[in-house]
Amino acid sequence: MTAPGRLDPAVGRLLHSFGGSKPVQADRWQRVKDIFGAVLERPAQEREAFLQQACIGDGDLRRDVDSLLTARAEAGAFLSGPASLGEMDRPPSLTPDSSEEITSSARLPIGARLGPYEVVSFLAAGGMGEVYKARDTRLDRLVAIKVLPPDFAADPQRAGRFEREARIISRLNHPHICALYDVGHHDGSSFLVMEYLEGENLADRLRSGPLPLEEALEYARQIAEALEEAHQHGVVHRDLKPANILLTKQGAKLLDFGIARRQPDEATGSSRPRTLTGEGLAVGTPGYMAPEQLEGKDVDERTDIFAFGLLVHEMVTGERPFPGREPLAPPALEGFVQRCLARDPADRWPSCGALLAALATVGRTPSRRRLAVVAVVGGLLFAAALALWTLRERRALPADTPGKSIAVLPFQNLSPSPENAYFADGMTEDILTQLAKI
Image 1 (cartoon, helix red, strand yellow):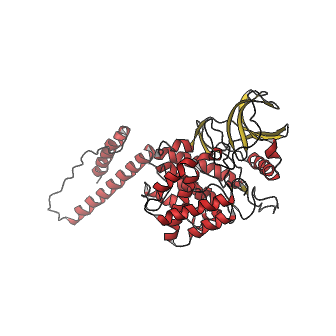
Image 2: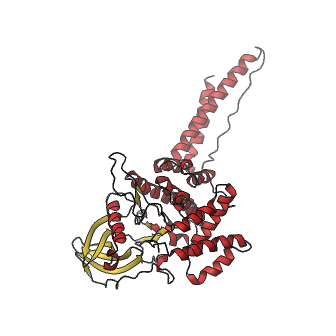
Image 3: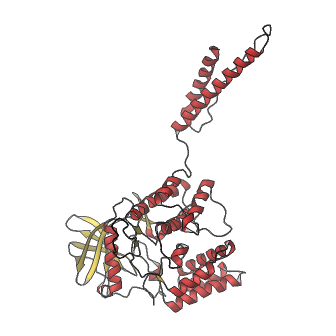
């Protein structure tokens, strides 16, 4: 069995064989990947019915997906359900058929103490431990505690990932990243004390349909800023998906750096460990993994940008992109997402900084001030052009030709705001004034 969150190399090679290099193969591969990921997100009793519906009329597609599922079964479960901080969130790893189901000792009882922290309620569990809502008795505030139970802590690999996750999060300080407050050990258990967040998981939110465009773009900006903070500290998240985004009153919060990867420090040439998992293994969630990630190749910030494109598409449409889909509107958004989803990392946005600059122009509507400036400048240019035309006509006429008159009709306010009506009146008066000087 592979470690939690890892894709067995055999499965990775099988996925790669579906990917191919031609556009038609890439479309086919995307469809197989989407169905494969969707199957794993469903309870065992619902999978067969879903497969029959998803692959209806396409026996080859069904065989491809079945091959992946068979390879996964032979390799062992490779997903870990990251513990999230939503009260109602229950990761897929808790389904009865999952071999990563929590096997630790009994959960902590209400009122249990871990140092100064008093357990209030159980929140969630996943492949890397359990999460509790707790009260910091010193500061009298609510916190979220992620606990690695003793039997998990005895596993050097799990313990190492847990410790390195703490080190990564401790370096990140951003309003859209869940903050780490403390780390500790108690009766053989290790735990992280994190910011307690109240809100709705993005995955749950999307079950009721897509988000309004303006809201989706605002969340996208916040998530991109959180990723930029991580990338500036050499951290690639590698598991960006709706289940790892919490929507709070303060905006979107990026969660779970359990399978994050740290890039080498170019400035110091540090040889610190670069990854929280083994080299050459694919890690992440099928359906949100970039091609290079599925193939077990090196990843960088552009790997997160691929997943970000999937996330934006899902927020706007309620579903992940698929071959033959309708283009997104406005067209600028379609172009933005297409570049995020380029198969070759070199063709994607090079950084979150560039991505944010492009995102700022997507779906942007002119402000009232901008509309007013455009109206005034347009009026002045029209008046100047009209004055020049009149002057040229006068010079071209014989001396005995009667003069011509010009009627200036009132302008109408066609902007969405009634407050701009005075610009229409002002433009009329300005044109009359300019003409009177000729």
